[in-house]
Image 1 (spheres, rainbow, N blue to C red):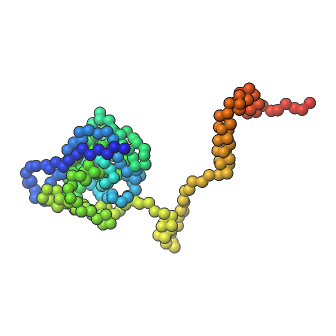
Image 2: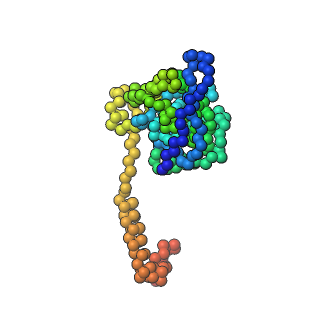
Image 3: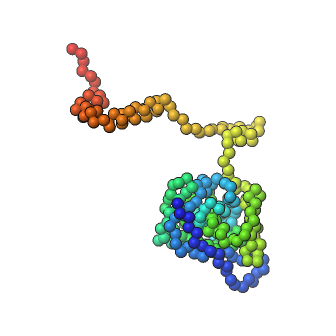
Length: 249
């Protein structure tokens, strides 16, 4: 597993004609890329510690943004890239390792994509991959550029400075999706609630156990030279019966 962090903060210089307009935060482009890492629960849209979801905008479309310190890079949903026709360089090959150990091939790199947040504009490169219920992931590639940051995860609040501007980002509690046990769900039910609670568990039947044991024994017997010779010489005796047995005379 390879974590690559090639980006450094680059302050955008220029005249600020509107005092109320937030100064854009711009990241340098990705120069080299071999493998990126993203949490498995990002794909499944589950919320975990060290993450925060909020709403933003890209090319006039409202999107869901996940700030995730477990992701090495910034990611953008490939479907969003196609829908908004965001320019993408598909010549750069890279792989994405998901937190459950599986890997997939990235679609390409979208350079200098402008993401609008509340009070902040982010201009950065994004890796186009298939995401779940999230449109954009801001990972360590972006978090490393914010300098000293104060984060209070229980209230979903991030505070940092972008130049001379103080930025306060607040997560949207309505976007939280977390795992919970069956007992926890039962406690939330009221008397008038109706429905079904289903819990899936893996189990092994007795027949499966016997079949597995028989296969193991058969494999051990076939490893013996004498057994292999007898099985080969009298193979017709061990073949599965395909016709009815002859009648007794």
